[in-house]
Image (cartoon, rainbow, N blue to C red; front, top):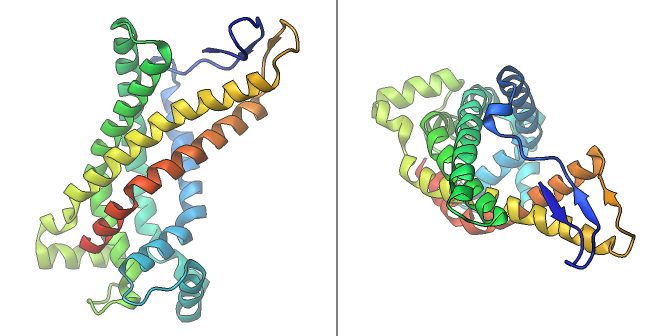
Length: 265
C-alpha cells in the first residue's frame, strides 16, 4: 500500500509494507508465534485486568492503585495473578480462532469491497471493521466460559460466594450449580460488548495508520521527489501509535457494557 506523503502537487511518497492477506501467511508460524506473543501480552497485562475487574464489582470504590495495594496486602504479589492459569488456557485457542476468523474475513471482505468500487482507504476500513466484528463473535464461543471461570477466581476473595480452589474446581462447581449454561452467563452482553469494540478498534486502527503516515508525509514535504522507505522500527512505531489511538477510542465506547458484563458474570 502506497500512501502519498504530501499534497497532490508533491511527487514525494512514503512506501510502507503491503497488507498481508490470509493466503500469504505461513500458517504454522502465524499460529505458533501468535500464541506465544498473546501469552506474553496476557501475562504482562493480567494484573491490570484483575484490578479493573475488582473495581467493576467492588461495593466501595477505590482508585486503581488503591485496589492493587489492597490485593497485594491480602494475597501477596501472586494475588495479582489469581486465575491467570485458567485465563491463559482459554486465551491460546480463543486467540487462534480470533486471528483465523479476522484474517480470512478481512481478506475476503477487502477484495469484495474493492471490486464493488469503494476507494481503497474506505474498503480497508470496512474490511477491518467487519473482520473485527466477526472475529469477536466467533472467539466468544470459546472465551466466554473461560472468562466466567477466571473472573470468579479474580473476585472470590472480595465476594461472599463459595470458594474455588482453582479453575477446574470453579468449572465443576459452576456446572453443578447452574448446568452448562452457567458457563455462558453473559454471552449476549459479551458479544454486544466485544463485537462493536473490535469493529471500532480495527476500523480506527486502519484510519489512524493513514493519519499518522499522512502526518509524517506532510512533515517531510518539500524534501524532493525521492521515495521514502521507512525502516521496520518506524513501521512498528506507527503501528504502535495507531493501536494506542484505536484502543482509547474503543475502550471509551464499550467500557459501560464491559462493566455490566462483569457484574453479570
